[in-house]
Length: 97
Image (cartoon, rainbow, N blue to C red; front, top):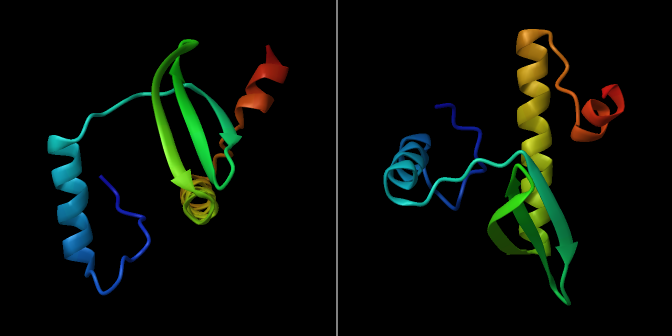
């Protein structure tokens, strides 16, 4: 498990790793191969889907959504640089079909 999380307050890397470990042990885990996202009045939501079936809804502030999007992009870019393989977007995969 690789930790590419944003530092929260004064949390150390070890504390963040413990948070991630506990989350994998105690929190529900979902797999998603699709999603629907949208905006409320002052927040954002993501409906996670597996094979076109909705499995979870995640609500968050717009600041959280923007930070998460930026962190996910950096994480995937790092993976692409380390492996030399470009990860296609879902739109790119659909165009190949």
